Length: 229
Image (cartoon, rainbow, N blue to C red; front, side):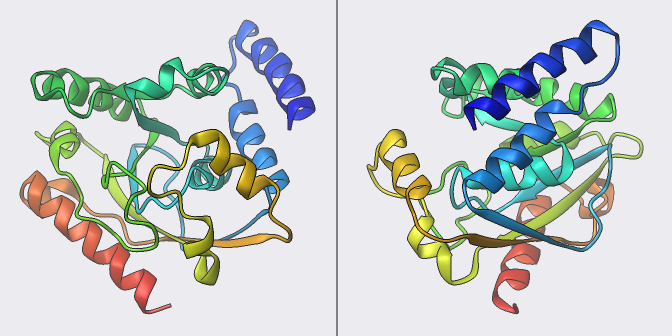
């Protein structure tokens, strides 16, 4: 992973210096996911841009799987920005940081997400706001869905069900387990980790009505996709 990171970072800055959009953050996430044992299978058709992917959240591996498959940027809690190395790597992938417990900042955070979507980016949001649910799906928090209202022309919400099958309970990041311990446990795990990314039919925010209804509808689609598998 370290060797892959070094190569991808060097190529990333070369692409940026030449004025091109860099494919290297996506390629690194896909490479890192494979080195961590992920074997990703895609079902459905992911939108290429002007899309907010919303998905269930089981583990940090979700970011490697979804980012490697789509090249999406992510919405992350703001403390991740200050994690050694991880925060810097996340910044290279245009991560949008939010303070999830600062209600006074919700509008400004929604504006930043709205600007990214309006520019054509694919952005991913984990609306549970935590991995504490494990393989269960917690209620979706509707606050950042406010970035979609009033509706932006051409922007859709695409629910994504991330399904680790029988491995979900074993690899889920729950409780008080430190990040380093969790990463060490998963990276030292024998064997591979099959994961299916089910890209479900996109939703028009205007047709959904309002953000709470949109959040609930997206969660219901994901839960149905996980439990009918």
